[in-house]
Image 1 (tube, rainbow, N blue to C red):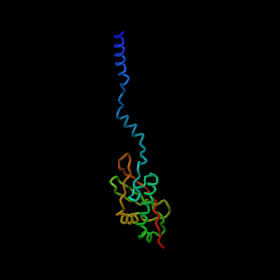
Image 2: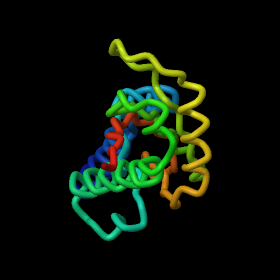
Image 3: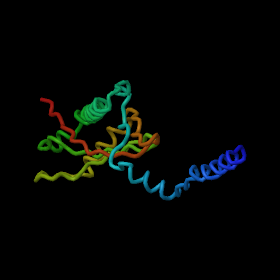
Image 4: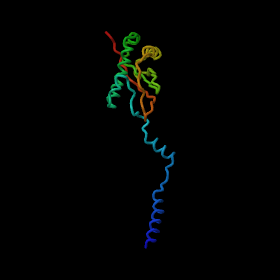
Length: 160
């Protein structure tokens, strides 16, 4: 009887080890599954300016960042010859590119309306006025700093 128990015990041990033997998933399949899960259109953390980095809520921080950057651009170009050269312009669209190394690039976007103006002139004014723009931390996706671009409507205030 004791021998049968030992044989039965050994048989259970041998067959139970096979139950735990599982296939190792293919690394390419795992990578493909992970890449499909990632939303490439959104970042985990938006770029942030110094005045907004203490805000913990993601949406409030995003709102603070956009308000801060638009206000900074408006302040820098409001007292310029832009108002004299093109008094009919009340808003310009500025494409802001924030690179992973925290460098900034500003570009004027072509207007959709009937007002025509020389984009090169406005762009050169913008480049001069925004050359010493305050530092901005780049966006973060999965722990890595990434490039982000935004088109911001900047209202040109006409001082009277």
